[in-house]
Length: 244
Ligand SMILES: [Zn+2]
Image (cartoon, rainbow, N blue to C red; front, side):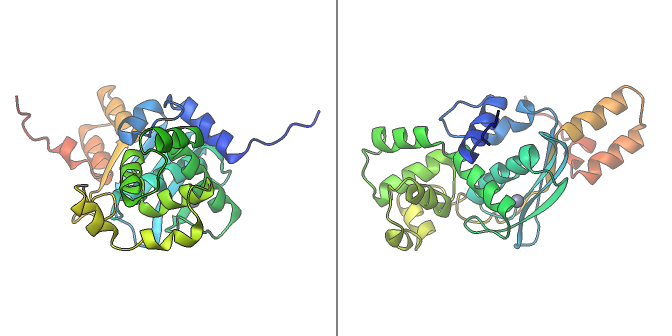
C-alpha cells in the first residue's frame, strides 16, 4: 500500500506534540531543553551571514547553535528552523544562511516553512487574528501578533500572506520604520534590534552530562571546568554568591 508523505505543517504539529507544546499557542523556548533531554543549545555570535547550525546524532538528538547577535525574533525563527534539521534532515552537520524568506536548497526551504508552521500554527493563528484582533489588519494588529508569537516582522507578514490575510503588494508598507513604530506604541525593541552585547552560553544535555560525569568521578574537576569553559559556562566554574 502506498503511503503519502506528511506535509510540512503535519511535521511541525508532530514536533509540537513531541515537545509537549500546546497545539496552537505561541512557543515558549525557555524550557526547550527540558522538553528534549537529548538537545544541547549553544548561543553565540556568528558572522551576519550565518543564522544557525545543527549537529545531529540521530533524529531529535544533537546540538543546535544560534547566532545570538541577531534580533530576538530572528533567533526564535532560527531555533524553529534548526528543529526541522534536528528531527528531519538526514545530513548530520548543517550551517544555515541568514535568510528567512528564500533559500539556497530544498531542505532550507522546508526548514523555513516548518519554522513558520511551528511558530504560528494555522488554526491558532486564525483564531488569534479573529478573536483578539477583530480580523482587521492594521499596524496595531501586526504589532500585537508579532509580540504574541515572538517573531520578526518579516516572518509575521509572510504568514499573513501565506494565509491570504494580506495581499503581498501591501507587504512593503509594513517593512519601514519598524523599530520606531513599535517603540512609539509601547513595545520593546529586542524583537527587531540586535542586542548591544551578544551573549555566549550553552545549556541542555552537554552541561548536564559534564556535571554528571564529574559527580560520578569519571572526569576530574579540572576536566569538568575545562569542558564548561569551552561551553562559555564560566558562571558555573566561577559561581557568584546566590542572593536570598
Ligand atoms: Zn537550515
